[in-house]
Each structure stands twice: as C-alpha cells, then as structure tokens.
Length: 155
Length: 386
Ligand code: SF4
Ligand code: FES
Image (cartoon, rainbow over all chains, first blue to last red):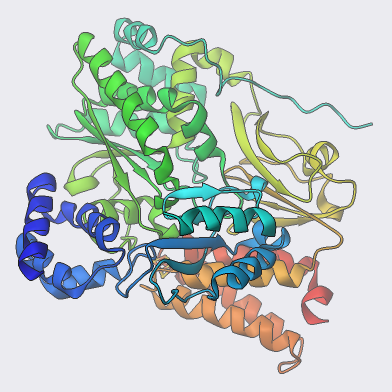
C-alpha cells in the first residue's frame, strides 16, 4: 500500500513538476483518488516537493474542499447561503437524511456518501442547489433529490 | 409609470470573429489600444473598480521578461453567478480577451483560476483554450493558457489570496503594495482581471471606446451583467446599463412586495424600500460586482443578516484579529440580542465593532462585513431585536 502511494505521488510530481505551485493540483488529485488526504500521501508529497509536512497539512487544512479526514465516495454539498436558505434548503437536507441516514458533517457506514453544507454555489437563481462531487444539481425538490441519490447508489 | 430599463446585448453576442479582432488590434498598435481602453473608462468588473487600461499599461511597461495574465474566475460572492454564465455561454470571449491582454502586455503565459464549484466546466474550457492557442499561433503570438482550480475558499477571489493559492499556499491575502501588476504570480508582473472584464476588453476592441462610452453613466461606463435572485418576477443573469435607480430595478424585477434589495452580495449594501428612488446602482451610488438579491416583506431581515454573518465567519481566512474575532463577535452579538441575553443598545456596540473592522482589517473581506451589517441594523433594527 505504502509503496503504491509513493509511486502515485511520484507520478503526480512528474506530471506537475517538483515545485511549490504543484501542491494544490497534487492534493486535488489525491482527493479524486482516495476521497480524502491520508497522512501517508501528505508526507510523501512533502518529501517530493521538499517542503515540511506541516506546510502541506497547513495548506490543505485551509481549503474546505480538501479533507483531511475520511470522506465518502460521493460528497454531497448542499448550499446553505441565503437564497437557497429562502428556497427551503432544509427540505433538501431532510430528504437526504431520510434516504441515506446521515446529517451534515457525517458519512454513511458503507463509505458511499458524505453530506456537507457549503456556501453559495453560484446557482442562486436556480436554488436550492447542491453539488455531488463535481456535478451541480439545481432547482431541487425533495422528490428530485431522491431520484438523484438513487442514481448515485448504483455507481 | 416605470421607466424602461436600458438593456444591452454585447456580452453574449455571438457574431464576433475573435482572431480578426486581434489582427485589427495588431494593426492599431499596442499603445493605441491601451489609450482606447483607458478612454473607454472600463473599470474592473470584479467590484473593486480599478481602471483596466491602466493595469495593462503598467504591466506592459514593466521590463521584466516574464509576465502573467490571470483570469479571476473564483466567483463566490453570495448571490453572484454571472461569471459562471459567461464561462458557460461565452467562454471564447474570455479566453480571447486574455490572449489580447497577453499580446498587449507581452505575457506568454496565463491561467484561469476557477473555483472548485465550477469544475464541471473544465472539459469545455479546455477545448476552447486549445482552439485559441492554435489560432493565435498563426498570428505569430505565443500564449499558453492553463486552468487552475480553487478548493472551496471564498477569500481566494481576493487577488493577492488568489496568487498565494496558485503558488501552493494557504489563500491568505497579503499587504498591498506590492500590487500584482508589479509583483504578482511568482513575483512577476501580473494582470489579474475578472472574467467579465476580459470580455469587456474584447467588446471595446470591437466597437471602440467612443461607442462603449455611450453606455451607462459618467462614473459607470458600459453595460454590466447582473445576477438577480430572490423574491423576483424573474431571476437569472441580465445585461443592463449601469446608472439605474434601485426603484427602476425593482419595478422590473421585484415581485410587487419588495422590502429590501441587497446590492453587491453579502459584502455589499442593503437598500430599504424608502431609499429605492434615490439610490443609483453604479460606482457613483451603491457599487456592485453585479449581485442583486431581492427580499419581499415575508422575509426576516434577522435571518438574512445571520446567514451573512455565518458566511463571513466561515470564510474569514483568520489571519488578522479584527476580522477573525470581529465576524465571530458580530454573529454571537446579534444572536444574544435576539435571545434577550443582551439589551438592544448592545447593537450600537456591535456597530462600533463593525466600524473598527472596516479600518483595522487587512483585506476587503473584513473591511466590507460592516456594509451589510450597518445597512441592515440601521434600517431594520426592530426586526433584529424582536
Ligand atoms: S480581513 Fe479577514 S479575510 Fe482579510 S486577511 Fe484579515 S482575516 Fe483574512
Ligand atoms: S445561495 Fe445557494 S447557490 Fe447561491
């Protein structure tokens, strides 16, 4: 496993270059691969880029889309900002909780889904809005959100 | 009678031959185009309002052999979605606008820094970038354009934080000066412009400064994209001339029961009904990055203010005390007043805190929290207290 990680990170460093500017894109690729930043990867990245592990962790922890604790395969982010709030984002959260049994901040036992609140997704005019991984979903209703989640359960 | 709002249709026009436009500018000469850009009065469309022509001129005149062009696509101001619409429908114009900036300033490399939330646009953008790069090579211009993704941090829309983030660091704003035009990405002279600004530069290249100046008002030239949402008769992105009053706006977009309009996002100003008639939208009145949020009388202004403060408290980078502690205290403060744990005059203390934040915070985030806070407390005090 460890040697696997090392190889993966070294390939990323080849792809992006061994300089500080490569840190964010590398972390983002680790996220895509493992759904969170495990310690091992962060240590290896620090070595590859010749910076301290604290620097890698310090940078990663700044960004809300870079998680340092385990996340589900599909990360659901529901917009909590004012327009979506007015358009009843709570109903969307409730529908999700009802279907997959987790509240914001939690991950399902099977590791399939995590649920989070997020800030304005730039889809206010089509709120309530959410993101699953990179995909935006808008004009949500509790029924619509259930159909969407069911399609992810099969993935 | 409501007066008709002046609409324009420049930004999403499709009949533009971009490479022909660049050829036209090449004939015209770099300095003449900069003069044209300055004369057009175009100011940065991200909200800060720095003259674009001047920015390009400073970078052009810098002898440094390496320069960068950066497009700030880290749109994140609550209620703003016009950059996304541009990237969806007119990405070519953005990309060619960046190529134009590269030609004028002599930069060979550029990046679009786009928020993680818009990552789904990347495939389309990459195709458009490839097309532009090969086209522009035939004109003898070398310009490489890359995509960089944010990772969920509103503050990275602040240009110095954006540069920090591109350099692989925490997105914490740095002091200005030095300005990015002198010492930007990797310490090189850098043009950082908003998505909409690059499009406007292309429009000016097309129609010329004189035509462009005819739109809008003296302080706010040109047309502007507005992101309109909330309790509206219609929501979405609309291209309007600046300089209209809030009343004109509400007549067209309100639902007939508008209580307040938040102009310029969470960091902008809340305009109450009694001020609609004498408030102008533009640099001479309430400035705006283009976000217009409409609230009708069923909405609680307390909930709105609390929602904004939660946003700022989460998005403050935490680097400087007035903003880190200030955002927390404002949020706790209004909650305490609402729960009657504090007397209502406590709001005045909070107003003083917001004022201090305006002057003691390091960047625009901390400095502008007080805008919405003050305008909501002053106009809707009862709603906050009871
Ligand atoms: S004002 Fe706020 S966001 Fe800006 S540098 Fe200070 S703490 Fe960070
Ligand atoms: S408020 Fe939810 S997308 Fe903007």
